[in-house]
Amino acid sequence: MTAKSDFQTNLARVCALLRDSGVPEANIETYAAQWTQKEPAELRELADALKTLEQATRAVLADRLPRSEGTAKYPNIKVRLDDLNGKAGPILRRVSYALSDADIDEAEVEQFKREVASGDPDDVARRWVSVD
Image (cartoon, rainbow, N blue to C red; front, top):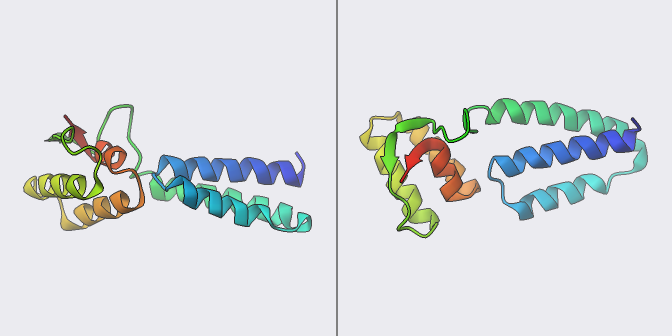
């Protein structure tokens, strides 16, 4: 592979990870545009940096992504969201209260809130609890 193709492959993989973790598409596009404006001589170094970034991102997201299709982090906590029309504030409150009511550690509840703030609230909720 050439440095340019390595770079493009690694950039695409990092962007896919960011999408999977709920980062807004506009942020990903800005991020990718910044990387693609680099000089061709920097591509090999950038390709290696992106590979390292991908590995680090996977490690950080390992606890945020679903364990298997349809399995929430706390599957025994059931929350109804269909009446909230995908609105971030109400979803955040309802799921946060459910987590707290189930005696989930406050640090975990705060992590959930950070994820909602940076991603799709409905998708984040489904990764954390069972949604009705």
